[in-house]
Image (tube, rainbow, N blue to C red):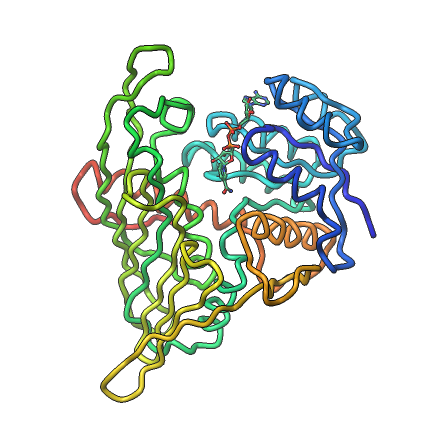
Length: 378
Ligand SMILES: NC(=O)c1ccc[n+]([C@@H]2O[C@H](COP(=O)([O-])OP(=O)(O)OC[C@H]3O[C@@H](n4cnc5c(N)ncnc54)[C@H](O)[C@@H]3O)[C@@H](O)[C@H]2O)c1
């Protein structure tokens, strides 16, 4: 099995998820390439220590990412840092000729995203993707198959969302994800939006216009030092989009991203309603595919437990449950297969899709400002 030598920049929540996925690559029953983490970079020593303590393969542990980029051995980089660093680091990674798995929003704003894509255009030989793991749940893959097979008939409407509730705890201190200078003006949209857009964009459901309602519900939070600080990022966003279907009709698509959604721990969902059939997937019921087939005047929902039948087969028995870290492992398997020049039935979020994402989110900010329906300029 080919080993792809990786550097990881940003060893926090997501950097460690990749580390763990790489450590259990034997879980997969594929002959695709495996990642080997040989270099790690974080300004926080404790974060580096977690990797050096757990990965004998790590040869470079540094606080200076240029040290990783100058290593000839490193072929690919996972860049999981706060949003204000995306542009500089992604551009430098591409200039250094490394394949890249970036993180959302793939640039703190549209200008940063454009700069990253410009740099990529100068290096078309590199495989570049952006992380988004929820579509890899087997029950969600079932929903994707139904869309591809045209089983819904004419689409009536689509609802997607990614909602959290940890900010309902008003004593939770502010972190970089709630600070405009590190997280960006998009707020919750930049943090959660790409997750909601992955399947719609891939299915060709590109919004032509958006009306956005953005809410700043908790404008101040504890600063973690005994005082309070302003929380200027948007907490919740509801986007109502108009989508032109390839078959010549228009349908509404709502995409919501919320940090204050009572009861939603990490609720990602997609619901597709059509004339012939409808279906739903939610991470609240992660093994189930819920569907309805239109028969006569009455309709009834059915729920099938799909089990562990992922895109890339694994050692886990088909009757067992699938979870978040399995989604991460599948996403990385998809990236590694593409990096190796292999076809995958569903790929990670592409750079071109990040461009669409920024066009939508930038229009959403304008819509909020002007209280208007905004065209998506792509
Ligand atoms: N795919 C997902 O489900 C998902 C989930 C959460 C976050 N994310 C994204 O992942 C990225 C990172 O988020 P996170 O939750 O892991 O954040 P985090 O705060 O847990 O980790 C970020 C790490 O970057 C390090 N860092 C900061 N400046 C650095 C620098 N100059 N050089 C090297 N390291 C530096 C920090 O010390 C920290 O350890 C963000 O883009 C975020 O939007 C994705």
